[in-house]
Image (cartoon, rainbow, N blue to C red; front, top):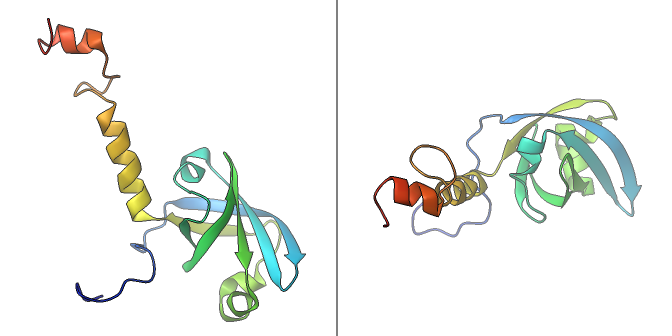
Length: 131
């Protein structure tokens, strides 16, 4: 992508962050809802209406909770990607959005001391930052 161009997607690196398993598939209108169970570590990096890549297909998160997320696949996605062939019980590769990962890491760093523990008044006092 050119630096002066329009950006209309999300940032993916092509590296798999983990795997999940399809636990349910529900047709709704012309869409197909896939509910994917994944680790809390992966689900915590997802946000509703945010981005995720599943088996290399870039998608929007329809719903997310602590241990699963849901995708709504339109007919074009079902027809043109491997996801249209997926069944309950199938394992999938998951990559979460890199900007979300950076954002979460930055938030954690803001609340953590150099020693890796929580940043508290006690920690600041012990290290000479306050008296």
